[in-house]
Image 1: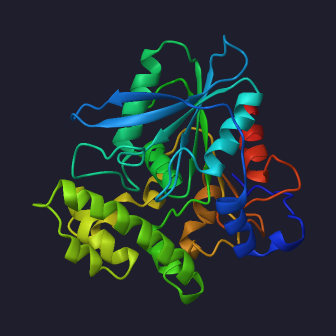
Image 2: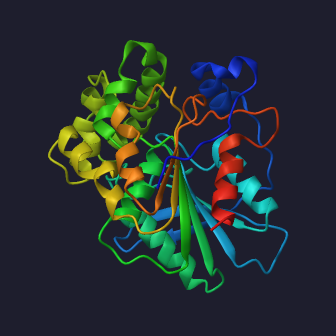
Length: 320
């Protein structure tokens, strides 16, 4: 399909990528009713915590599944904001906490990663077992967007109930995105991710001392070091490069046969050129690619309480 032409122009200072990224991630306040938490048991003996928020229509047969980003969880403003917008339009929402991302460390040494699409498949199996929802949409942010696009493009049978999906600020090329994040201009962001992940890994080292040592975690000086030490090894990949190669969504995009919108800002400093799959979108019947000039990384701020990516996600899904 031709590239989608958007009309997003942010107010004032939010034309700056850093201002929009930081404000949306850390300063934005989103009020929604308290989630209803549900723990589902996975086929390998681990668990995932789901957080539900419901529309006022008790009979709604529509559900949106939300996937968070790196070092995220369901409490992030971007997750609550999207749930709120869909709830207001009579969609129930279920927000995934990836393994180890809720209030309790998961049971196994492994946790989550950008290609953990089997966990998403198990959530969908659970949702379908409720026999309530005939229309299911999915929205993934950043790392969760990569996981989502990989899931949709893999050689697997997808539920007929899935009508479409939206990926926001998707690092389709993980290696390229990591290179972008590691640039000096992104030092503050990369350090914040690194410290967050190290804190998480130190808890894992206490639980699994035979698998990982705190001194090795301390010696990591970059996100790639962490992926070499933990993410790749814990999930069956040779090293970080192998992990990025096998799980990047870019290679799976041509296999997508459900309508999807990929919304990524041109000024997103976390994304490399290959994270904008222009040629693939132009030759696809299903992939819609929108590249606004502004928006930073999941930072599509507006003067309204509804942000641009939320409006566009709802518009796209309800237009299917």
